[in-house]
Image 1 (tube, one colour):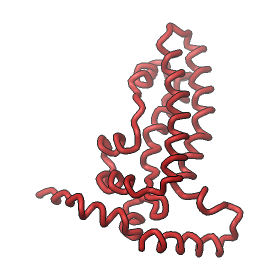
Image 2 (cartoon, rainbow, N blue to C red; image 1 turned 120 degrees about the horizontal axis):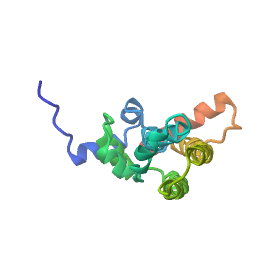
Image 3 (tube, one colour; image 1 turned 90 degrees about the vertical axis):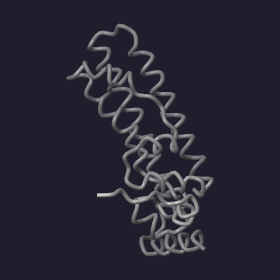
Image 4 (spheres, helix red, strand yellow; image 1 turned 30 degrees about the vertical axis):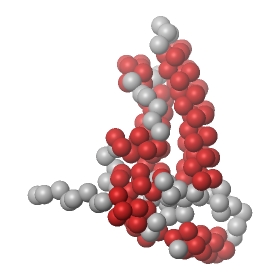
Length: 176
């Protein structure tokens, strides 16, 4: 079976502006961002949480490196990774900025955690550190998800019917 040819950069740009194409690719049509990026953090959080019962995961955690959104998708196995990278260029500037701020915060926590794990800590100290770090990171991953999903654009206090209509209107305005 022959792999499908890669779309041209012009095709990717056109797809990155098409809300229907983005939605099919699990890329938010309003923000043009994909929650798949958060897997980069969810994986290390899972390992941190498991340190108490599996201290041998310390080496795996120490191998974690921060990756920006575009770099993550360059290395990703996400089916629509090229589209996710192209859509980043057209992403809502406020969403991109807010997401990058949350990412910087998560990366700072992880950098400090990795530095501490490089010391010869007891298994109890490693477990406590893993629990603490994952506790700090989980709400930030949730916040990043809300940014990716455009929740700062459409306030949660909006009624369901009004909210759905506002989202549809925003998608069509951006796609025009």
